[in-house]
Length: 193
Image (cartoon, rainbow, N blue to C red):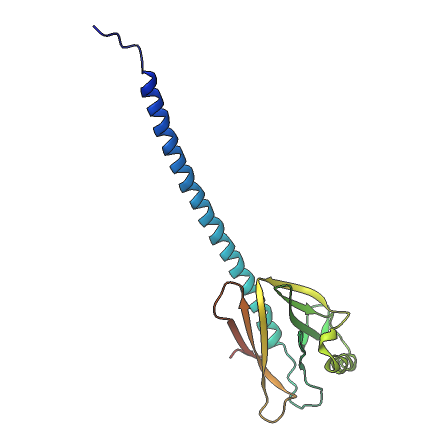
């Protein structure tokens, strides 16, 4: 009669090899699942950042000063790298006018805002200075939001049919890294298009 005292060395080694192969397969599957999870979370984060920038743009455009009497210089000013426009600003503490600028720097779309000007003459003076060279910017403007992974942006005004002093609305196109077609958003002052 044969005496069964346990597994042989060969049986133990085969079992360990099978367990090792199963463990390797499981770790590859988990690694792939974690990579997919990180990719999806990155895409969600990028999408949320784009939505925030488009909401800022929509709000800025809707609050844009309507230069219907055309007594002001153009309230939409575009340089080689900066685009500026004047908007109405209203909060519990302040009322007045504010300048908003958009530019792409280091593959990021930056939104700059100035503190509100409560005096209309001061705002008109700043507007006239900015009209001379929009790319010099404004010293008082602060970065308020940054959208990463942007190759270029283009903001085009919808001009009044009579003159190029009254921008009635804006269209924003953003070309993102890794996206074939640009994202676009349009609005008119004091309403949606």
